[in-house]
Length: 308
Image 1: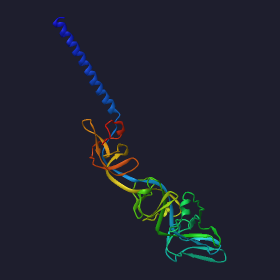
Image 2 (image 1 turned 120 degrees about the horizontal axis):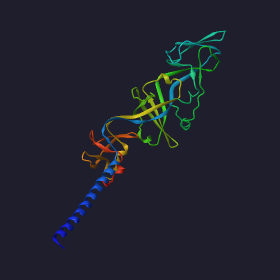
Image 3 (image 1 turned 90 degrees about the vertical axis):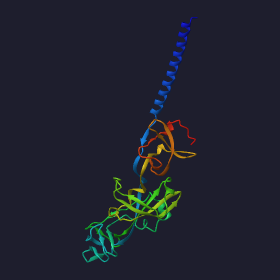
Image 4 (image 1 turned 45 degrees about the horizontal axis):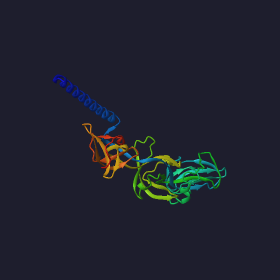
């Protein structure tokens, strides 16, 4: 074989190796491109997250029911929901033989409505029976207006102590161990949930009944619009945090601690230990990150090894 032919064969073999290497390199590049296409990230920034849950609460007031002393026609002088001072004339009953004046027996908000649960649902009377029937209370609601007929001995009006207002709520199992007696929490009573008018409340007592947990909340503000209702929709807020937030899906645990994956500016992925301050159902406030960090939100898609 001539030297020229031998050189040609060598060049051909070299060229084959070169093409083979190029194919391998392109394949690896394509693999990583396709692999990284499955990775989703989020930019770390400051957020406000609210730790709490929405629920239906049972309203418990400090109230007393007074009965009609005679039969006749009721004439209301003090409007529904207004506050009376002790001894103030609030109404009178006319039975064509006499007029009987009704005076407030004590100071407080006057309501001419009742639901029949006033004696059962009151502070100091949260019995096991109350807890067992938490979702089953039925109201027998009546509302008097001027001109209504009343009978001797009928329930006539309530006197509500507007310095006390309580809510009884049932707590899901994932929350029951997160609260303590006398802990301060907040109630968002606005349906818009904009957190603009929160009511400070104290956990007066925690009840356990039939493997269920209940909180009795002592509100620091009275709401007149709840005078004549028993069930209200609220959001119970344990904490409001401002800090660096990441989605919960980005966080995972390893033997060496709680971690996230960072997607670096040079397209590399590295794990980093973090401390979780508090969480909602979707987000967590964490330490040991910086604003602008890119965090992988689906770390299960990354084959990086989780041995710490």
